[in-house]
Length: 533
Picture (cartoon, rainbow, N blue to C red):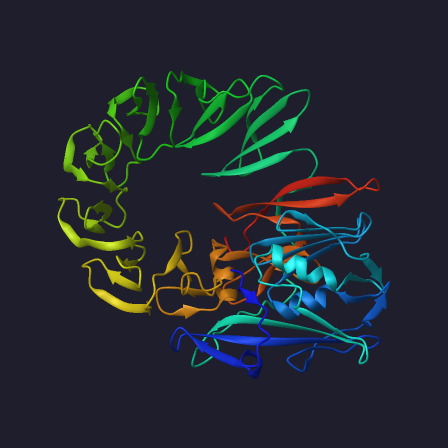
């Protein structure tokens, strides 16, 4: 999450910190000072790491990219392509591209007018200081013409930047990635043989290669080819679960033509507008009508088991599925069993599949949970509730001022955050974490929570990437991705330009191989999870 910055030059602001919004948030003004002809670059009079001199060129102060970005945001991610002489920088959610040969800068995907020239000197990328103002503005910083001051007599440039920070009694722990990791254990070493590899789950992979048309293959986790579709015969292949795959014959086709098993044997054609993933032996199917869409369910042989009579149909879980009987698909949600019997009255505005014995529902009064008997176990009184994981769930009050953790009886386990203003929040279900922009509208001051306490942004970023005990992490020195465990130990060495999440013990990885003409070849492979035996 990007911190917001603004330039504050009044005498009151220059004194240090200015409390705002009670005792929770304050505004801190940082002073950055660069002394030309020296290696002296300071943040609040603290000398920053700099191994090459700041200099003047064509009347512009030249600052090294890495030093400036990391001084402003210690979590800035910088990837340097030595062959192409192009740097890609991530400041939170905003990408910045610095192209030396073309002398171009793009910030937040918008090209800016470049003052002076970018330059590589002594192995470091330098950018004229005047450009930093426009770069940060494009990334939602508040800056104006007075943000940067040049003192010609002293030969120094000064930039004053204010940021909102959270008042805490003590600093939050930040994970430290240590170790070099071990060599990857490959199922498939990175190769140009495939354009794409998808780890679709249940021990299956789908590959695509272009050979005068797309060629698709289905493979198992020993990399044995189970089925192959000749180039140009199909446009796409997807996995439906329960050993079933859907096949699209033509480009632009909105629905699959037929379903095959893992060996490519055609099982049945698909006369429906769409087909969903199988859960508990049934998949929802949709057909277009004059008034919209109708839904029903088919089995793994393509037989229609539940008629096309619903305006919405969700996944089966714990023996039942949420459906809507309203003509518009808005409201009148209930639950049916595998025979199509309505077992929970369709009276909800919305409903999700059951999980851990409870289903999330919404009524006029708010969101809550019901059990399989349709009883309100957690009264629908919240503005938001997450699904239960390991017996607890996140809950946000209707006024959006409190973040709570509740148990399956609706009892408040703990209060994580209370604000005098409405909160903006995001729930990450894969890792069961909550991100809060606190307070709303205050330049994106972010807070992050697990169900026990507030955690640092660095901890949040590490945990949100975890799958099967490992998280893809970027090594800032090499610009490559490896995998670290929950203790911050690098388990798989950083060798990859892209690294996907693990699923069923495997992860797809990519390596980019630069060519002399500036293009890149992509090698894609599959590694095994070394934590899983």
